[in-house]
Image 1 (cartoon, rainbow, N blue to C red):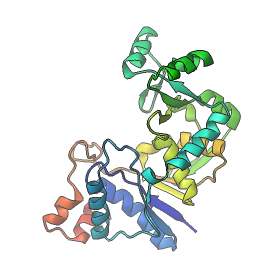
Image 2 (spheres, rainbow, N blue to C red; image 1 turned 30 degrees about the vertical axis):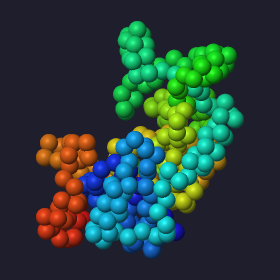
Image 3 (spheres, rainbow, N blue to C red; image 1 turned 60 degrees about the vertical axis):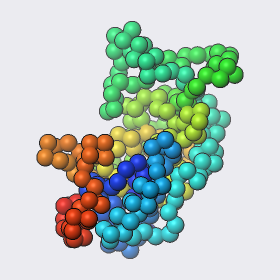
Length: 277
């Protein structure tokens, strides 16, 4: 049975881009007799708001999108992410990173540049080179730190991997393109990459439907699945809706919200049409 999901973050109101993504997964599930899940990705407690969560649930219902089973809220499942992080730690695959953005920028400048990935310059590995005693000294001293994946070591342990995207076909996993990504921070035992991988496995997701802006992240998620012994879904990275300037719609740039469209009197059919359905 096909199982897919929509996983918004309650950091603002939903816009047409969100509607398109939700409808891609919902339509696939309903047409195949599968299950469609709603997950609230609320690990960023500095930006997530209960009011935004209530609004997005209401907007989805007004859009005609329903879901199967209870809503999973990431903030209620930190122990799941901690357990996954412990597995990686036991295999020697993560290390504490004490670098600030300023430290990273200075190291890149000193080195005359750094390899680039799809999201910009890769982390130059400053703290990967620290010895165990120095790491413990800094932690004992109360230094703030993140936990990064040693991607070179992780790839060596996992071996060659592939994954399937419904629009681009079979892919050879290349998680190195994202470098030593942050998997957790001192104050929060997870990041997007870790929590979404764990959640999809625990919820039995068989098809990950999300925007093509996250295509390269799937290389890393495939690696995490292998390291954690998780089932492997397939992926469908759909095109993004864009504005008149060809830029993807985003909360940050003030994309028109679904709430404002409904409040302006547009029908469900009209809003769905604007969202590509």
